[in-house]
Length: 415
Ligand code: HGY
Ligand code: MN
Ligand code: MN
Image (cartoon, rainbow, N blue to C red; front, top):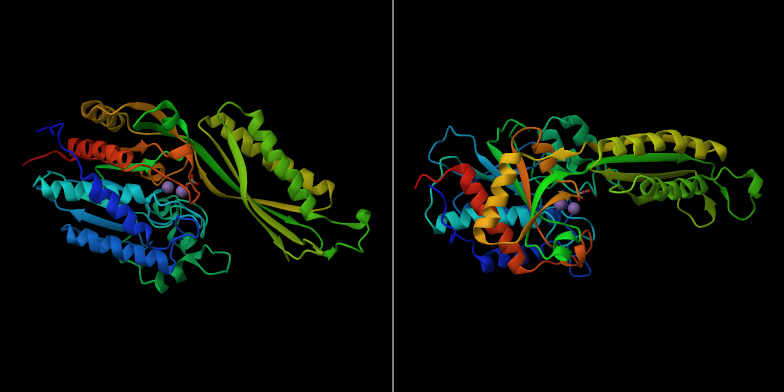
């Protein structure tokens, strides 16, 4: 039985939930600072759990702290259809990155309850732990363990800038669950997300039919120089890790431009030690973020830094080590599910276009386990990872309607 095209979610209820969650871990400029495994994250998790239970769902938690809220189906043996994203944010994050996908999943369930619809497959709404990787690198850590990319021990040992480990902090906030990570099997996975780029708004499209996600490398570079007085040390006697870092940073821009079209590269975090204004750094650590949908370009950009960064450092007598702390190759999402998203947008009369995701998502890892795809809505000026991140209630609801219909098509309405 197909869902009638008038089947829609409750825009105001979805928007109210987004605004309610935005009050948890507020930023300093209207966005959010709800970094993973902080007390604010714990508060957001409890709010989400309460809402799920009020909607009649049971909530399970795995040993990475990922939350799974289940709405039963008529066939308990049928593999569930999963929806989800993440409630953790960047330190200067917006109100919608990740949160929209989790709360839209909740809104789909709330709407199914209102309409008294029963599906054959159970439906699960997921809050993946530590998608952002801002506090504990790499990004998509919990879904990476779920997909067998990382071990649990590796994940538990990841440390934040204060030296606290993921495992300790998960226990401290009381969200260490008992489910084995990755034991759950999926019939399909849908992730609804803001585009985090300018294309849909510029093209005046309401829905992004996400066909692929670009590949990524995170290369952590550690440069070892010699601490010395910035005033009294002659220039010829310096072993200047800061200068080596500056030259490599310049190369990041050059390499991205040399791999156009479609490549991007940047550095968002750099730490100097001892980070004192009149001490030349003994150590500089920074992460190079390389991305492109083109596999050969992705491999080429990484190879250039593996060769060139040590050379640049050596010219200055500076030591250099490189650790790949994040990686996934370009992902093609499931064509059947992609077409269901496109068909749902058509049925609902929403304008849409195919699009490749510039940002990484937990869907990149679930795609290795089960048929997976994504839905995008536009965001104002394409801005994200910024407290001014903004969408409209209408944009939020349009994508949620498409999610509702694509999920129903996959979970099969029985009554
Ligand atoms: O880095 C990313 O693309 C995602 O926002 N974690
Ligand atoms: Mn996200
Ligand atoms: Mn993000």
